[in-house]
Amino acid sequence: FASWSARDLSEERFPILFFDAIHMKIRLAKRVVSVPILVVLGVEEDGGQKKVVAMRVATRESSGALAVFSSTPTRLTQE
Image (tube, rainbow, N blue to C red; front, side, top):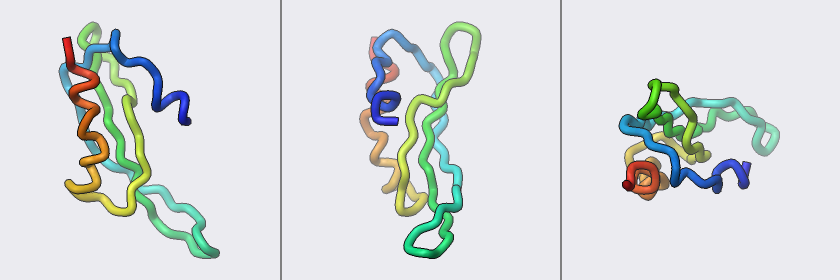
């Protein structure tokens, strides 16, 4: 996962980015809890194919939690 999340995106162009979360159930300290996974989905400029651009585990789903992606739009849309 570390190498995937650090991959070079300098040649990619995503004019549309979707920020959302999915909830996964995981076992934590002998309990099953629902944990939000924050996801950035990009739509490619050529052809409109969708790609998962970034993912992060969060403690909760909120606008503050989405701040972990603060560099993502800049990293993806720079020309």
